[in-house]
View (tube, rainbow, N blue to C red):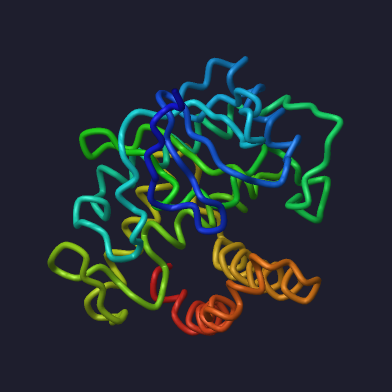
Length: 264
């Protein structure tokens, strides 16, 4: 008898199902990520899936992290996910992940490596946003979807996490669940500044003086990745560009250039 398969939400590119205590999906083999997950397991990092190999259908098998991923409809998410307590826990989770990746070695390369090899401090998740965070009782307890992982500086990862989780976007959370409103300096600037400082304090770092450059460079890199991989004919990225993701992030870069000083 075949095992029951439960479709999971998310999986922007690949269909994801739960089978027993495992998660399975069709995906291009990614030995860099497989080695990373094995390394995290060896370090006792309990907040990421374990890689279990492939099933008889050739699908990746990962352990299922107990909890849920309430950020799948980001940015239309519940109010508690924008709370300072969640941001604090997210900073601590990212710090523990980064620390666990120190010393990681593999013979495989990641196409998502940071360009300056002298800045390869940790393995960046590169998509550590609320839609890739597992929650349990409204607390962040795990990180999933390591497809974009690659070596880089801590601030490269922090920049994207803060961009999506403060957020530093052209929208801000509204007053009720799943509501977003346009950014307004008089309503949101001081709140964003405080949350940036809270995240860095919880992570264990000072807010760098050039953090604006890190965030803008990070979103510009997303634009380049979308453009380059679509131009190379990658069907997943062609779909993302067709859906307007590239145009959206190009607008976000302009927004950041215009408003980042509001939060410093």
